Length: 296
Ligand SMILES: Nc1nc2c(ncn2[C@@H]2O[C@H](COP(=O)(O)OP(=O)(O)OP(=O)(O)O)[C@@H](O)[C@H]2O)c(=O)[nH]1
Ligand SMILES: [Mg+2]
Ligand SMILES: [Zn+2]
Image (cartoon, rainbow, N blue to C red; front, side, top):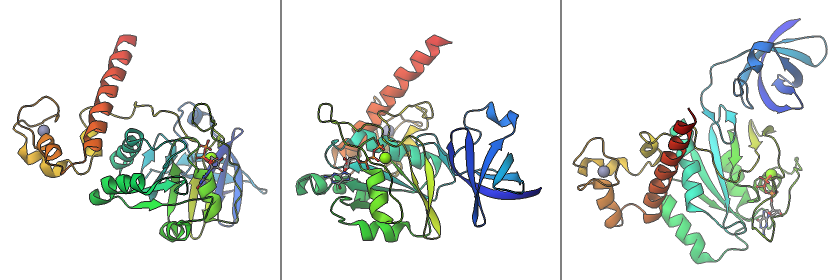
C-alpha cells in the first residue's frame, strides 16, 4: 500500500478515475464522503491509497482552487463558455448567466461561438461587439469546417479548461476538432424544438498538451441555487466602473432614481442586452427564493 495524490478525471459507474503519474487508478471512496453530493467532483485533487494493481481508495480531497456547480467541476484555469451562433440559437441571457457564474467563482472565461458556418456575419458582429469591449475573448469557430480551431487550440495549451454550455451547441464536436486523439460521441439537434439531445452524460477531463480539456454535459436551463441577489452584480464585470454614479449604496440598479449603471445603459456604455440579462436573472433569483421560502 502506498499513499498517492492525483486528479479526478471522471466519476463513472460508481468509480472515480484518478490520474497520478503515468497511471489512471480506479478508485472508490470512504463512506463519509459519499454523503455529500458535491464533496468529490471531476477536477478534484485527492490523496488515495493505492494497492498493487490500478485500484485505490480515496481518503481525502485537497482544498479547491475554485468550484463550479454547472457544469460540476473543480480546479479550472479556464472555462470555455460554448454556444452555437444558431441551431440552437444564441441566447444572451444564458451566456450572461454562465459568464456570471464563472466570474463569481473566480474562474477566467472565454466565449467560443460555434457553428459559424451557419450564421450570418451581422449576428456574429453583434455578439462580438457586446463581449469583446468588456474583456471577454470571443472565438468564432466551426467545428465542422475546422474554422478558427487552430487559434482556440493554441489558447488552451497548458490549461486545465472545461467546455460548458447548452446541449447541442457542439462542445464535444469542438473538442474532437481540437484534439484528433479523441473521438467523443456527438448527437444531433432536434429539428422540432431546436435543442440538443443531452448526448454527453458526465464530465471528464481529457489529457491535452500539458493540461486537460473537460467535456461536460449540456444543460437546458441553469439552476440558480448558487446565485444570490446581493452578489449577482459582481458577475457583471463592466457594471462596477459606473457605480460611483449611484446615489444609494448599495444600489440594486433597478428602481433607484439616480443610478450610474442605468445611466451608462442609456448612454450606450453598457450593452442593453447585458443589463436586461441582469434584470432577468435578478427576477429569476427572486422567484426561486420565494418558492424555496414557501417550502420551508
Ligand atoms: N453546422 C454545424 N454543425 C455543428 C458544428 N459543430 C457541431 N455541430 C453539430 O451539432 C450537433 C451537436 O453537437 P455535439 O458536439 O454533440 O454538441 P454538445 O454541445 O456536445 O451536446 P451535448 O453533449 O448534448 O451537451 C451535432 O449534430 C454536430 O454535428 C458546426 O461547427 N457547424
Ligand atoms: Mg457533448
Ligand atoms: Zn445603481
